[in-house]
Length: 241
Length: 200
Image (cartoon, rainbow over all chains, first blue to last red; front, side, top):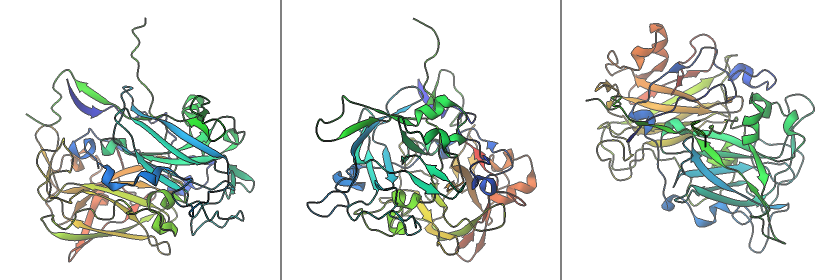
């Protein structure tokens, strides 16, 4: 069987464009329905990356911006998991990029003015390629919660942003990872743009004691699922003929 | 045993947020961390075809520029070949066809240099007019927006995707306007002249 187009995206599982409790979405959400497009090679292909694009240290946020002999402040964590598709097959050699606030909830960004301090030893971004089984890992510090101007007392739960490619441009995805047990998850207008609690659960990394390194670093598991592709039992003329 | 088909659900999207640059373009966030950031050279030095510049601004429903937006471009080379094993043909060494595009934080203006893509195969043996696929993320955008940029100096009348758009006047929102070697492509998220976005 030959792989064909991607399964239609379940838009009721994703957040809708217009989510008024997340105020910024109001003026940035299209009002017309997106036009459904059967996949062509433009959507099935996508950028590819290799080990020459990144450095081995890029996935270690404890070290990739720290001065020699120093470490960022905060709870040392491992975030690891697999990138799979909807068919539960691993997505190998795909680029995973992450970014986050430091342990105090401050981003290293010229536009972030929160009063918590910058950590001189923490950049806050990392990237890696999944291996042949779709496995990836990062080492970092657990990010802090921080306030944001939505409501006047809205706080983001601790989170790590993640960007994933897959093999086709139609799989492109950006999401956010939250941490099991955080009471701010239920109160966050951005988390709550996701309609289904089971979908929010997919965004919640779970404590993983077996992957934890005793006396060193605590681990959280976060699997990422990208769109899967049909297999053609019958010719659907994707490429003509 | 059960005969229920066992599929996983896609991980739900969340907004890229205002600090997307830290992860995808740290130089723009204000710091230097990687040996090389990704996505700054779409075509490379060896690509054949016309060298062009594409520019624009993303505009929100109030008419203001979206200054913290990030776009990604995905395109074929001048021969209509994508840098991917499922695209028939070869691309020039160094041609990736993929780029990341950030704004001037003061104005929201963005731009990138590339080569003009050629026509690409579509479905059912049809050909697609030259186009650049765009993906748009930002604070306030809950799921990345897909659209396509076409060129006003090409014959787009037979393009099967443009012709899928029932409202003929809306097709114009996908046509970049040429001045010299520059193509202007403003994207309106909402309101009058809302750009056509695709569920791909």
